[in-house]
Image 1 (cartoon, rainbow, N blue to C red):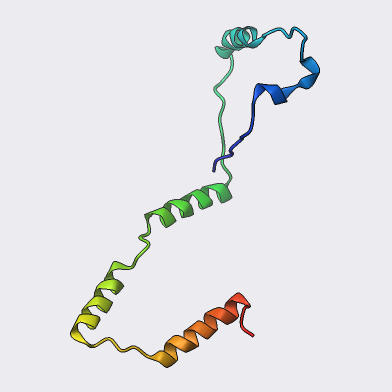
Image 2 (cartoon, rainbow, N blue to C red; image 1 turned 90 degrees about the horizontal axis):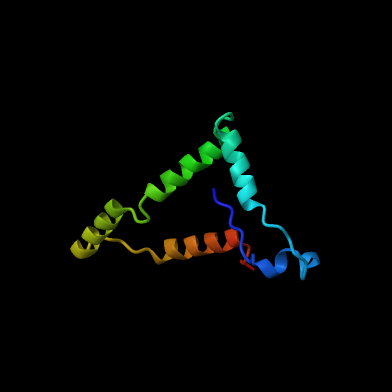
Length: 106
């Protein structure tokens, strides 16, 4: 999962320091962390079981084809041979069913 942070620029960070000299301590912090880095273990990130499950599901969904190729081939074959039966009543019933599921039927 990704967290996106947008709309950041230096003019919005802190208006209280405008016009004042603020020391740049980035190099000091990096040097200090490098000195202590040999004594400390590396940072780690641990995902919960739920997060792992969600990641696995996302991978499976991305790997699943959008179109059922076998069904398309069967329908195409039946259409070309004249064996595909179109039932207007069934189509109308399905349309009404979907419309009622959306809550738009009156």
